[in-house]
Image (cartoon, rainbow, N blue to C red; front, top):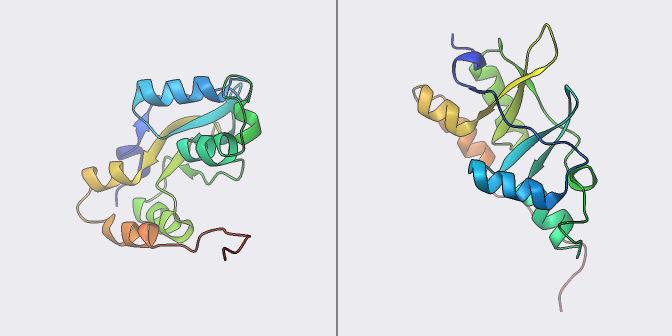
Length: 148
């Protein structure tokens, strides 16, 4: 049984909810990532993704240097513990269609890393295939208006 600790990326970079989304986008570019955990001090309060920036901010006409991470971040963040079994976390990732999960230390409740589907796929043998199928299955678009 492999645990998340064995495959996670430790020492993950975080961003404050008071930073601008422009800074978040710059960090994503510098780090070559699509998501950054948002921490208020030592507490994980959300995640900001490239999709959050695009859909919740840019598409709404907000100005990147005047819009804050806390205004567009996802606050309903699924987390896992570093000592959790990989298969258990993969099942959750597949069920809720997410590709990356912040990793929390069970004792301190502090952010200790992040695990992505890619981490699991490259560091285990075939365990991620079923989760990838579930995560990648198409979902219905969120459309409230009809086109004529």
